[in-house]
Image (cartoon, rainbow, N blue to C red; front, side, top):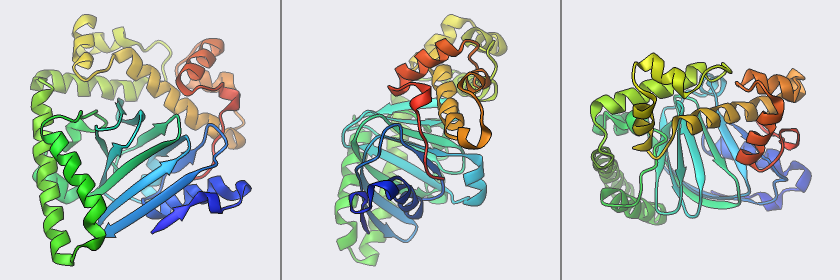
Length: 310
């Protein structure tokens, strides 16, 4: 299936693009920091597997608990940018992914996708059950950047071949190819876990830390020192745990607050909340500081941020 948003009138383009993306994938909300002018989508399916190539102006996609309740389909969204950078976030973790890399998230938990410029990216949407059968640790790398080396590069090359050739294959050929794709993903994930050199203890601590961020980010007094205290580790060790994944606890916490702010600003037409109220709700005591952080992250002021589509 092909769709080109440029064929839709400018006034209806944003809503038409969001509606088509929901139809091809699953329920989520789409927001646009700038006027949306260009979106192109090419989708192929085989059974429960979906492949897609997307070209789009800047947008933020948020799959929230309400969307999951209405549309509980269980998939893994595998993102392969053709340019970048693109941000993928889930459970307090954030991956900044560029060309030649990949990241994935599960659709049974809230996540957010964000691109700040016009980008092209490839997507594999894989059913959850067969992925977990082959890779029980798949949730451990949700929203983790997997660079193009070793088995990750092999998987990327194979996945791109799937995108190109799946429509031309017979049903039996496609089924065999997809089974191999699942197996290769499991091998690549296992290799990625090994390459990160994280011990099981540090990995467990990082997940506990990100869970605390998800639970407490609304609290203005919550900061990396709070995380270290609650985990009974030093701040220096906390920094090392996040550095192994290319992150810092401060950035993860800040990004989580800004993602929530984007959602709340997008609902202002319903909630009638002021920017200052939203700033406090997401953990900022000073609205001016919030505005500076928001602009640094999104490129625009909070008052200029707009949202469309459910």
